[in-house]
Image 1 (cartoon, helix red, strand yellow):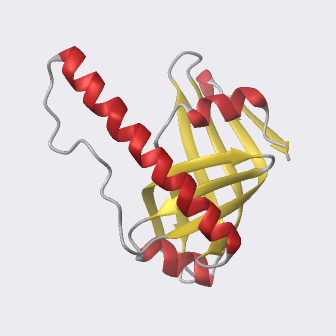
Image 2 (cartoon, rainbow, N blue to C red):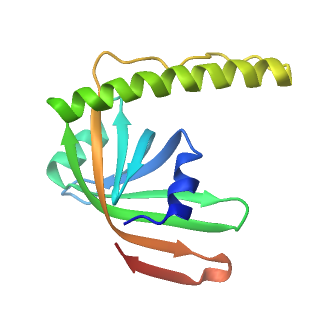
Length: 154
């Protein structure tokens, strides 16, 4: 299970970097919209059905990475992906995604007004086609300042 501390760090982000690799060892890293963290799973939205999607179909292993600016600890969440593109779980994720998109747009508008900043776009463009990447986290790597690594099986 993903600890509450790491879950809180993840849920403070809207987008997170996901690295994948095809069978010819060509890497790809791309930002994905974070939908939710539940148990040992991280649910991501892939709006651009491209390189990440084709890599996962060939090799379903990914690495999610992010950084905690307060502790200066980086994290890798490594695991296996299930592609969700239809069915009840997809419909539930789609409804949750619509709520998250409204929340994100509202937050960006309020933040922009309070800071006197204009954004090029306030709302997340709702794609007509998207998939859910359901990542079963199997390993968490803590990357401490000074190069110390701590690996933990989930």
